[in-house]
Length: 144
Image (cartoon, rainbow, N blue to C red):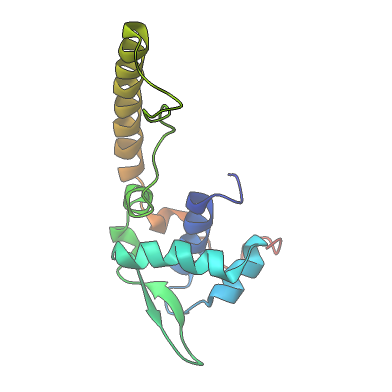
């Protein structure tokens, strides 16, 4: 999965958290695993906190941890909490006026197809929990 996407970072971090649910992780630790900036991690995980997926504790012993059991968190919960959406046609505006009937029809067809595809994606993601991503840390490859 593409490493710089919010969804990829969130799912990977949640997989690690599911494997060790009693261990909090700092933004810096997660950022190091993903070769990204801790501020980016905090923005992504903040969305998951707002979505009821994570909780955070401040202070020296603080960090991010699951707000509920990994079995209760579906991949679709993460997708929705992040506000992920398929690409959409450019919005109407002075640079992109929709004056053509064919353009209006095309936009309607594309929007309908994207809505259907996204509903299918969410339904599939709902079938898988974060718990299924957890791997015993003693058995995993030390590549990250």
